[in-house]
Length: 109
Length: 120
View 1 (cartoon, rainbow over the protein chains, first blue to last red):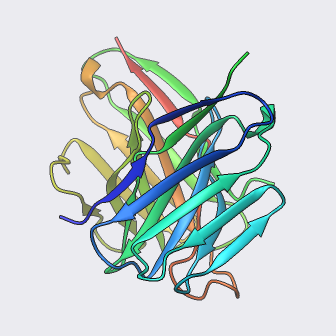
View 2 (cartoon, chains in turn orange, green):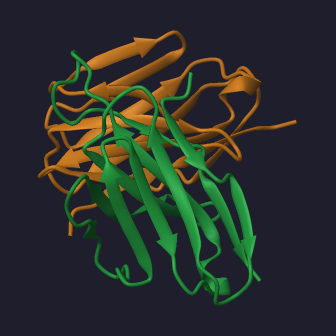
């Protein structure tokens, strides 16, 4: 079946370091959405990418959608404690939303 | 502010009893709502799609007689876990799509705060 693989599962960073999570789909996506879930909370929509090769920025967050519309990445520059949480990608394919497993961002004490 | 309200936030029930969870869209009409289940440290698992005025569409492996879904109005969907057992203990989250001008199709999902169900 259709899958969206998301890696890594966890990423430990020092505050101030960068963070990146990657999603790869087995099929071409019509669009991809990104969500953030804080510990104990619910997923919150961050952004949607639709166009091939699209790049969008939200302050320190950079989202990319691959040329083939099968992969996507989220890059956070200079992480802060407020960035802690799990970041999920969700790809739309054949009117189905397929979720990645999520990448948990952990700030080292 | 919150656009999807889910109630209750947490519930503890005895094995064999039924539990109803409500999901409301607060300031928009949602013809479709989604029910997810999330195990600790795992991703969201879509259980079913709730359609206003018609039967819900269940994902493979989800028992429709155990997880009853009713979408009686454009702003309310309910999930009833019938004859709950300890293995049903989980975090249940509902979501709804809100149409945005910038996202005419495949609109982003707004999630409720979730319900943590513990069956003893």
